[in-house]
Length: 93
Ligand SMILES: [Zn+2]
Image (tube, rainbow, N blue to C red):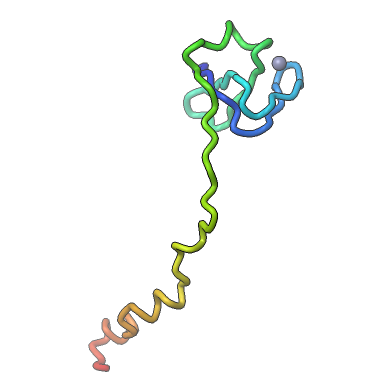
């Protein structure tokens, strides 16, 4: 399957080895059952990029993206501390 997309990072064309800069249109060729994809620049691809491809959307990185994360130790304290093996064996706390 051949689809057009905007490069979200720099790529290299698999046919002519030219650089595809981030934000440029590129054609991605995939085959069913194969995870590896082939990337083609606009010059090497079949046809031209569709005008409906639009521009690349740049996502803003949150200033403090780790602020919402809770450490595993904090989560472990909030969970019932009984050992599952003791529970399975019927031992009481
Ligand atoms: Zn190329």
